[in-house]
Image (cartoon, rainbow, N blue to C red; front, top):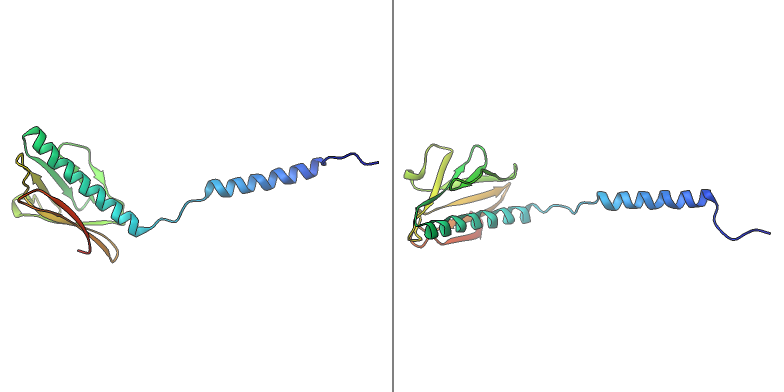
Length: 146
């Protein structure tokens, strides 16, 4: 007569299969969308520009957002340097007075809400997103294309 139950070998096989399945689930990463990543970074940059405008109005002092195109990075006021993803590239369009060199420049927001104006083009291969800063109102807009 055979007793009901599982053998040790059967239990080890089941545990090994469960372990492999768990490893596959834990290692899974959703595929990254370059388009979503580009739009996400554009929205983040627009948010940082809006933050600089709000700081200028609240602090009653100009706040500059500076861009280092060679390092692919930006800084809001005296804050920390923020780097963009390596495959995304930034182009700055601003007035000559806000350019320190061919690769360093900025957009300044004034206490009355206005700005020096200009814009940014964020690109990832053929995909582009434009961020524009209105000089009169300091308003920021994000649009596809460049």
